[in-house]
Length: 279
Figure 1 (cartoon, one colour):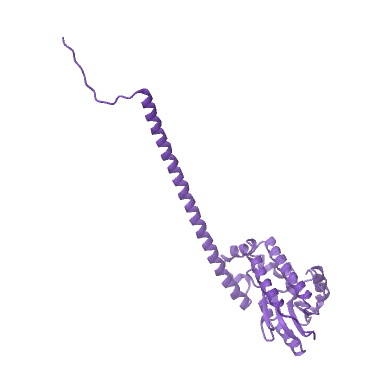
Figure 2 (cartoon, one colour):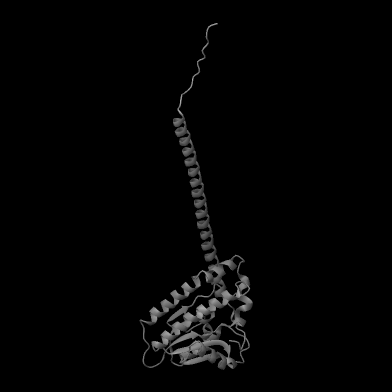
């Protein structure tokens, strides 16, 4: 009957070689998967970084945008309602992220550097004017404006920070033997309460405390300038004026230097300094 043979093409591989080959394929597959995961993570990281950089850029842009509004509002004594809604978050970040503290520190540092290089004459006529209301934290004064935008804790934090720096500067000026005259927008009938509050924050030994006359029923921007002019006519030399409010620097006889302390991005109209015994 004869015999038939069938020839099949293929590769002969021992069981050991097959095991090695399959293991190699698995290793390559795992490596490719790991590489794919690593690339995915890297892309996600880059995306997050770019997103964070973009958000930071937007925050910086918003900050300077709102600071421009704040400067305009201060110059024109405008209320908080003047600000765009986008400035609400910028105002909160300005306080909570420490920029307000840094601005205060820089301004007070500039003032301290100036006074470390100049000395008052022995005749007692060289004086420094300070805004007494910067030592006072009054929720009744600002709450109906500022608290529409930032929460109560942030408001009080900013007030405490400002008072801390103002008191620090006050004590240094006193140690350098500068005669200090304090000017307040509050009426004369609140003199005792104001003196008591100033003493409670460590401010004593000032040369004079000027209050608003009780018969002045409306505040105006000339309150500081009138008293500066009067002091100059009495022979005093105003070396510097220190205040966080723009109205204090308006008018003549502003002195040799003005040190404008930063505010929490908002200004308050002079009329909003209501008469309150709760200083």
